[in-house]
Length: 114
Length: 111
Image (cartoon, rainbow over all chains, first blue to last red; front, side, top):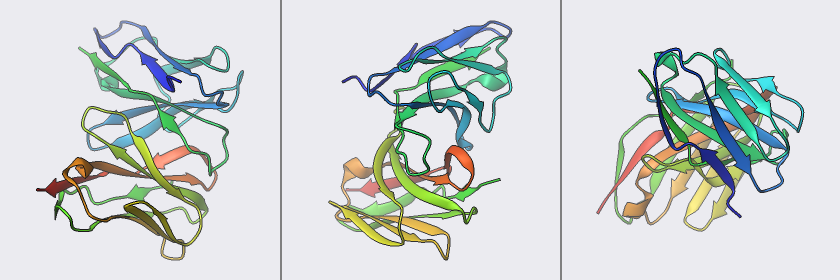
């Protein structure tokens, strides 16, 4: 099992460019999440998907869109990148949305927006 | 808004000693509490979770929860240099989706 995988590992964009971050999990989990991690800010939830076909906003959704393509894949799209979106992005998955559910993280995508 | 507070450190502990990491949370409705370890440049890795008041032990790690005081801690016994990392406290439940993370405590184990 690969667990949670993310592509790309690194990306540099210019302001205004768009890109999609890919995430896939092979643990048959129902819930998937996108977080961003900034120095001094900790991990913050961007969007999540409780199950295939559903998505909901988290704490910091502005400037992002998501797609739950199927049970395995959950992508994060930046339509018009801004320097404020420079961050490390982590995808996570878990069995369900119950508060006791454990989340498992992918390796992260390090994004720089110039 | 749910808040999770941790001392950012660095917390320096001699090798072989007990490292004590602390976390407080604001939402009394929180139901689950997690400790993740994160090495520099890597992703968070789950160490332990705890749901009930009291202590939970797993090898060298002990998680402690006191819901009345809204306090959760992680003890690392016989600290090793490989334990040097940032430790993230995360809280689930209480009406919010996903986990709410603290900013992490940077732990340094001195050989």
